[in-house]
Image (cartoon, each protein chain N blue to C red):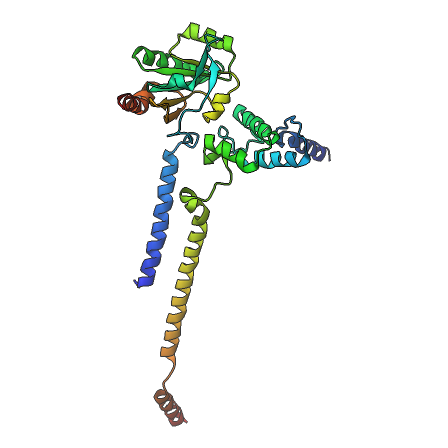
Length: 179
Length: 157
């Protein structure tokens, strides 16, 4: 084979390999899961009321000092109901979880927390979705992991089940706690 | 004929549903309305990922349209508005991604591959042409051979 032909064949094979690699990457990559633009950035400033208490004011300051999960949920969100018992379990184990009640009716939210128990330490009420927008939330449930300084370190879109917690979130949370 | 009218009716009925959802925003100027249209058509809905936020009925697209309207009224520029959304949702929301290190292959990859392909074809063609030319040269007779050939032909007579 001449040198030119060798180069041509090599070129074509390289092209095919590249294409295959991209296709494989595409298959293993869930396109509905977007990388958050907020990783490494501080949790946005906010000042809202608590779900349990319309007079209490919660701000970003209240999140500081401990690593935590910030779970965006709503009573209209069907998969949140699936996720809720898992969060209850985690709260029992001592995991710090804060809730953001996203674009919801406060009375419904209160009833939900009474009926299905309350895993949240802070119950941030976000009826208009302002905080949600600043967090880049595009559908509940979404769960953020923040460190002690209030920096967003990880985001998970979808239902946190036992497996997700064990395999994905627990190691990151532990790291943030130990920091 | 009846069938044709029926088909036509169905086709026309589709127009209504295919159109973008229309919001009842009151714009102060026509220019603002036009900017709103361009923005909602250029931005992509993070929830229903193959729609722009003009076409999407997802609640998040509605919120984003609200936000764009509010910011237009506040007098923000298109760049400011796009930046606001990109800061929160990432480059994903832009149908026109910016040129940076990550998107370099996206912007210039096709052109590079095309150039590579053309270069390959050109190389093959040139080589082939060159080799046929040398073959032709080999087939041509030298002056000695020509002389011999004419001798042979003369002898035959």
